[in-house]
Image (cartoon, rainbow, N blue to C red; front, side, top):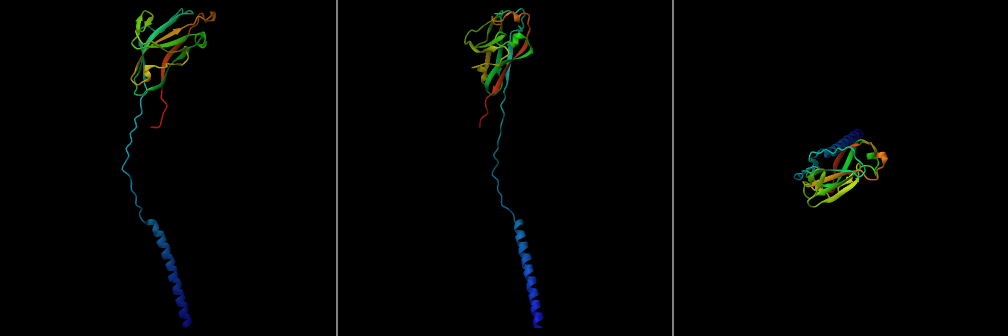
Length: 200
């Protein structure tokens, strides 16, 4: 009987021990079900408005930029009002040309058509084919007609500012006989470029 009792007692201890292990495992598993405290700050509201870059060129007068019988030494001048109608300044403004019909007049950068761009503090005064500036005339840039000429110091670099522009297309006296009977067509365009982005 003593042997039997001992065996029973040993079995009981084993069962209790097993239950203890199971209980401990359940307790450890239960640790993952407890709640976690959290908190959030009040919202930090942010609003970002992108600026607007916009430039417009309005032809002054009714004469088109079209001429025939051009010879070396000839020039033609027209006026435009250049206005920065955006709310951002430009880093640079250039006057370029998109050629729709090419010839030696536009492909020869040295002896072909040239352009110069001048500004005036007030509106240009036209008399026939001549434009005069009453005050504040300055040269903004010059170069081959197809080149992007930077308008250095243009007032319209600033937002809501205006330039009174007179541009002149000319054929240099160095153009030789190979320039006779040639035709070129092109569209003149003013292009403004934004300033470099910075940390704000």
